[in-house]
Amino acid sequence: MNSKLETSLTFLQAASSLEAFQTATERVRDHYRVRHVVYHWVNAEGERFGAGTYSGAWVDRYVERDYLRMDPVIFGCFQRFTPVNWKDLDWSAKAAREMWRDARAHGLGNQGYTIPVRGPSGQFALFTLNTEADDDAWEDFIETNGRDLMILAHEFNRKALEFGPGGENATPPALSPRELAAMRCLARGLSRAQAAAELAISEHTLRVYIESARHKLGALNTTHAVARALSTGIIIV
Amino acid sequence: MNSKLETSLTFLQAASSLEAFQTATERVRDHYRVRHVVYHWVNAEGERFGAGTYSGAWVDRYVERDYLRMDPVIFGCFQRFTPVNWKDLDWSAKAAREMWRDARAHGLGNQGYTIPVRGPSGQFALFTLNTEADDDAWEDFIETNGRDLMILAHEFNRKALEFGPGGENATPPALSPRELAAMRCLARGLSRAQAAAELAISEHTLRVYIESARHKLGALNTTHAVARALSTGIIIV
DNA sequence: GCCCGCCCCGCCAGAAATGGGGAGGACAAA
DNA sequence: TTTGTCCTCCCCATTTCTGGCGGGGCGGGC
Image (cartoon, rainbow over all chains, first blue to last red; front, side):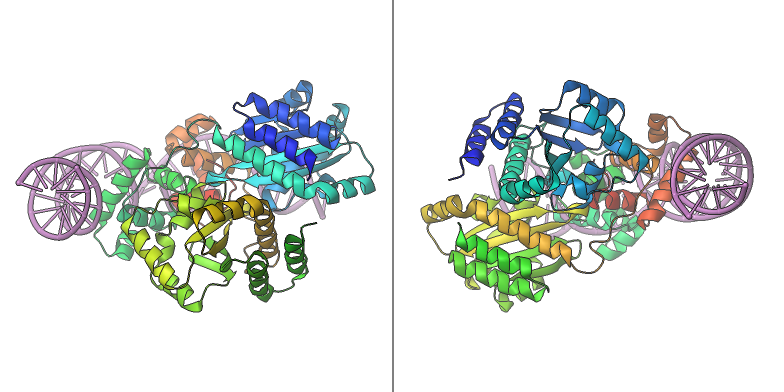
């Protein structure tokens, strides 16, 4: 039995508040003997929630300098499915290298490993380990613990979604079949006239569906309605 | 060492063609002694790629009857982060219950477990096990093998993304920061005037961004552009 | 140093969407 | 039976979007 993983997991599973995340990251850090462990969750406006062992100074710096917009880790993970070893990322951009120097100055180790985790509604989170080590040792570490870390990352995310920021677990409104069909047509770029033709109904009728869907979704306009339908997952493209 | 998992994994990792997926699902089925194992990958037009042990008749039936649109498994997984036991899904809809009877008639077992996997650009896949068992036995099975199955599901998806169906791995078009901001505003339901005010630019400038984004995304209109931006994951509501 | 992409602004006219209003029939659950 | 939700159709005026045209400044990469 893998006790490092299990004790971290049982602690996390029992957690009943967001504060527990902080402690959980510290536990993982201590169990796996790395310098930093961070779970954070990125969205449109930047960062919705995060917990980790980075110093407050570095977190502030990160936000202040808007590093989120140039961080190769964020960028790389966002377009990959697999976890990334920081060494494999593209650090060629000047802004990225500056950020890296800054990070080092704020106590980050030279090695990092970040696991992207994606949830419903476009939710996107990162689970990161950082430490000081030479390349070979770090490779070995990842080889040995990679699978554990993936489980951990998922468990963190599951918990975060569970009592995450407002109403994440709210069930989306149920649209009628025709309303859904209308939303799908619009999401595919059809105009109302085209969509009406596709569904073989009058354009007026289609409008009724769109209006109705809009109200049910609490959307301000058609684009908003389609966006909501997509991001709540009631339609798939 | 967990040999069931390891042999499945090594085989899959060595796979060099899509045909290997078929064999891989069969291996998993035999290792874990279940009736069916399926990996499939859903997108706009329905199913782009799938491999599994379902009978051809059932797959055809599924497509013919457009079950994708009413399948509680698809629906449930799409809104959840965690794997689902089919028993826990909402089978109250009439269409769903009919589909279920049909599925049983086509050789599916009474128990199922499906793991949703999400990749970059809104990619969404499902890894499913199905078999005949009583509830308690199935709970035990999931308890015992759940973690293995998650690793397997991810490995399947990694492979699928690696040499996935054409152009799927194409990186989504890169929008400029302002274009992204414009898309985000629209996805939040703001009108052009409101969005322009929010970004503190003239409405015309905003239009330029929207147009530009629309072209880059290959979208037919604003709603389409926002839909694409959302479903490729370049913006998060 | 030049080019390209990004950022910002203006005007115009036609096309399209929006926000009200109204009506009737089908079907299913309470 | 009644209530409700869905599906279907129609009219109005107003607002908003779309697709063109034009302009200038700034910064980074080749």
